[in-house]
Each structure stands twice: as structure tokens, then as C-alpha cells.
Length: 386
View 1 (cartoon, one colour):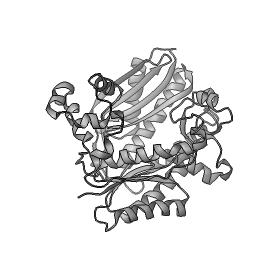
View 2 (view 1 turned 135 degrees about the horizontal axis):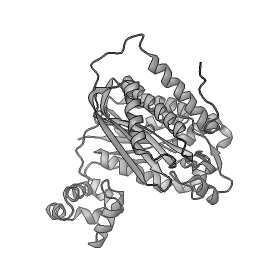
View 3 (view 1 turned 90 degrees about the horizontal axis):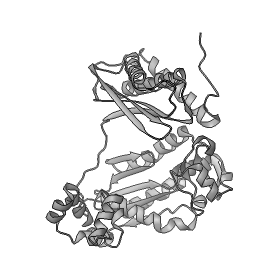
View 4 (view 1 turned 180 degrees about the vertical axis):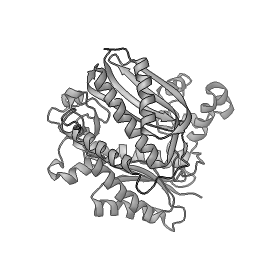
């Protein structure tokens, strides 16, 4: 029998910001961009959530819902440092940890004599030692552990403070736990699938669990078969300790639409540098170079070219990206978003030498420039030329 735990830090960015500035505690605030620069809410405090503010909401709308909302700019350095501390505590109690985001992870407690006590002690230690609230769901598999955690958090977030939920689903009771929940809570059931299920009288996960798998396969394809099994609490996926990158990309959404070709090419060069630095750091090379253009009307164009050989060379990636841009951008047409990406990844056969670290220095410079711009506005600092 497996025992899998899912840990999710409660309003993580906000919790870290409160550590930096205790005056924020108990106040409605949001981490994100400025409303006059198309900013969105990356995270919001629980007092703000009680006023209707939600993550991914345009900051302008958030301010209309909560006029006294305080906006705090993102501090990714602090978030990454806090995340590392949390993950170290998880790895101290489990050899199998699947980190799925900066503030979320699965971990295996199957070998523990009393997994509930171990998980509860971990939750308390993270709050005591790091002053970061988190919620935990425990079940026999990843699917139910995640849904249990989400359900536990949802039941407590209306109180206007971090939920610090703890939800345990005993082995053999997975289907019973899932049955009353809306079918949209199940992985693989998006809005369109939920609407199609509603047409045949399926509203809850319990309704779906009673369906014949083969009939659901015929009606909904492979996904129909899979969601029917999930509705019964069946999930045999293992924890994935390390994920292989399938693609690497950098995108920039401009605070104001841009149409200056020189400025746009400068963005392309910066993004190509960041992509190549990421490839080199991970020991990867790429074969396909891509660009993404989004016009002011939200129409999006993606184009790519495949090189004769794999590479992580900055100049090569930059030249390919600029070629794509020059080919597909219409002079003077305004852009809302611009991006550079690579795919077709393989492990590099060339080892980076001890003294071949210029790209790493360059990446740190770019990170610093990006951090300054996120805090004080785009264009406040530029590179000097010698």
C-alpha cells in the first residue's frame, strides 16, 4: 500500500512578503504588476481573497473589487530561497519527492510507521521554523492526495486567513471521498468535458464512477476511459523525482505595445541569451528554434526553424530567432508579446570547462536587470556600451 502526501504552501508569495514586511500581515494585498501596465495578480493575501480578489485576475479589476488593495512587486529571489528551505525539510523525511512547482510537492510516506504524525510534524516544523503556512493532503495515490488537499483548503479559506489544512483519506475510501465532489474537480475534466458530461446527467465524481469504462471510451475517447477510472480513485502513477525538459522558452508581455524594430530585436537578443544560458546550465542542446508574436488584438503567431545540428550557442540561437522575427514581423505593426524558445532537446556531449562561465555571468546580469525592471518599471536601466 502506498501513502502519498501532497504539500501546498498557502499563498506562498504573500507569506514570503509578510516575512519581509510584517506590516502586511492581516491586510489585503496582492503580489503582481501595476494595473496601468497590464499587471495581473500572481498571488493575493487571504484578506484580499475574502474581498473577491483571485490569482491571475487583472490588477485593475482587483483594485475595483478591493480599492484599498496594496500592490507588492514580485521578489523571485526571496521566493526561490524560501522554497529551497521547504523542500529541504521535505527531503529530510522522504527519499522520494516530486516537486511540481515552487510551492508544491508530492512525497512518499509509505515506509513511515505513522505517516499522519510525520506529515503533521512536518507541517508544524515548516510553520515554526520558517514561518510559512502550508496545507497537506494524504491518500494512497497522487490524484486523491492532491484533490484532498484542494478540498481541505477550500473548506477553510473563507475565514480570511491561511487554511493550514490537513486532510487524510484512508486506503479503500478514495471513491467514497471523491463521490460528492463536482466532476470538474477531477483531473482531465475541463469546462468542455464537464458540459458534455452534464448533458448525460453526470454532475459529480460519484456519478462518473458508476459509468461503464468501455461505453465512456466509445463516447469520449481515451480520456473518457481514464476519467472514469480516476473517479473511482484509481491512480498508479509513480512519483517523478526529476523531469526532463521538452522545451525552454522566454516570453515578455510588454507594459505598452511596442512597434519599434530596434527595441524588439533587442528583446529577441536578450531572450535568446537567457534561453542559451538555460540550455548550457542544464547541459542540453536544441535543434529547433521558435519565436512567438502576439499582436495587440491578441492574435498569436508562432514560427520555427530546424537547424542542421543541435546547439546551445548564444550567437546561433540569436541569429535564428532574429531571422524568424525579420521574416514574420510586419514593420511598424505593434506587438503585445514577444517570445523565443527552443525544442528538440538532447544532452550535450561537450562539458563546460571551469573557465567557460561567461554565459553564467551574463545570465546573472540579465536576472538583475529583470528584477530592477519588475520593481521600478520597464526601461529604467539600460546596458552601457564601451
